[in-house]
Image (cartoon, rainbow, N blue to C red; front, side, top):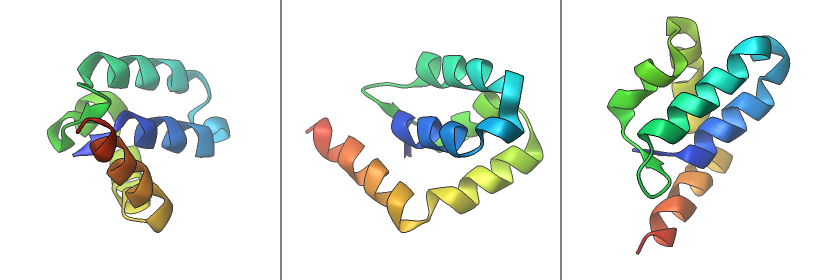
Length: 77
């Protein structure tokens, strides 16, 4: 489970690298999110690139990304 905010931060942190793909990634993430949360199985559909998927999973376990995810979970309680 990830937060929509995790995707937004990943896109922001990789703006130059993602360039014209950023908008599509954010659009797909918003489309599959529920209450600001995204299932782990949706990441492939959202990012559509194996290297990005791997890099996202590495970023998602950093303390900053973990806190973003926990905050999203706490917000829906």
